[in-house]
Image (cartoon, rainbow, N blue to C red; front, side, top):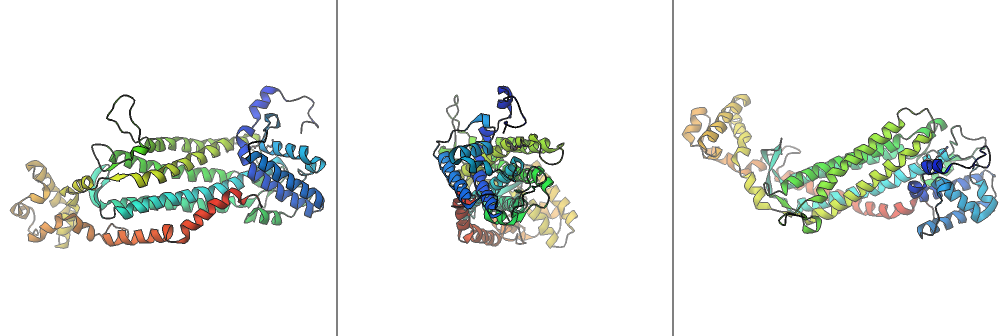
Length: 476
Ligand code: ARG
C-alpha cells in the first residue's frame, strides 16, 4: 500500500498509534465472507476469471482455518484485519490476490464487516436475552403464589406476587429484544460497492452480492454508506438499555438479599466472601453487573462523541468505533450468561416475603376503596383512611386491629365486612384489570410467556440461530 505515493516507511510510533489489528482481527469471519462475495461479483463482471475467483475463494477459506487454529500471524505493520488478510492471500495465491481489491476500498469494506458483525451479534444477544427471560419465567412458575410487598420509593406500597415482579422483568427484556430487531432492519443494508466514497467506474452487481451475504437491502448513496455508523450507535444504545435493565434487576436482588430484607439468597456458587469478615456473603455478580452499566453508557457516549463533528464520508476517526462496540458486546454477553445461570439457583425465602406482605398498611388503599364501593368520594375516603393510619401509628395498633367503634367515628360507612379488606390474597384476587396482579392474570401471563419462550418455537429458533450465527457470514 505504501509502494505508491509514500516515499518513507511509516514511523514506528505512528504505526503503533494507528494500527487496529490488535482489536479488529475479530472481524475476520465477516471480512472473509465479504471478500468471497466480492470476488464472485468481480468474476461475474468479467474483471477476474473463474479460475482466479476460485483461487481467491480457496485461499480465503484456508486463511480462515489458519486463523481459527491459531496459526495465523497477525502483523501490526499491516495495520488492520483487512490488510492482513489481503496480504496473506496474495502471499498464498500470487497475482490473483492483488486483484481482489478492485472496485473496493477499505472504507466500504470496514462498513460491510461492521454491519455483518452487528447483525451476527444481534442474533446472539437476542438468543441470550431469551435464555434470561426463560430463567425468569421458570422462577415465576416455581414461586407463582408467593406474596410480597410491592415498593415505590423503596417504601412498602401494595401487595403483589413475586411472580408478578419477575414477569415485569420479562416485559422489560422483551422490549430489548424488540429494540434489537428494529436495529437489525437498519443494519441490514449492504454498503459494499460504495468504494471510498463515490463507487467505482467498474460496475458490479450489488444486488447479487447483497443476496449472497444475506442483506435485505443495498445502500442507495455511496457517500452516506461509508460514513454511516448510525447502526453502531443504535446497537450500543440497545446494549446500554439491556445494561440498565440488568442493573435495576441487580439492585432489587442486592437489596432483597440483605439481612434487613431477607427475601432471597444467592447461591454460594455466585457469591463471594470477605477477605476480612468471616460472616460475609456478598452479591458480587449483581454488583458487578450494576457497575458494568457504566462502561455500556460510556461506550455509547464515546461513539456518539467520536462521530459528532466528522465531515461526511469516511474519516479515520471512525476506527475508534470498534473497541467501544466490542467491549459492550462482550460485557452484555457475559452479564446475560451470568444472570441466566445465577437466577435458577437463587433461594426464595417465601416466609420472609409473606411476613412483610402481612403489613396491614399495604392495604390502606384497599380500605379507601372499600369506602368508595360504599358510596364515598375517593378523596374523602383517602382522608378518612389517612387519619386512621395516623391513629394506628399513634396508638401503636396495627391498622387492621383498630376497633370498629373507632372506625365508625371517622365514617359511618364502615361495617362488619371491613375485616375482609385485610386479607392480602383476597386483595390480590380482586386486582383483575388487564396488567394487574390477580392470580388469574399472573397465570395467564405465565402461560403466554411459556408459549413465547419455552413450549413454543421461540427458543428452538433462538438456539438454531446461535448455531447458525458463527458460520452464517461465510458460505460453506
Ligand atoms: N482500520 C480502518 C477502520 O477501522 C479501516 C479503514 C481504513 N481506511 C482508510 N482509508 N484508512 O476504520
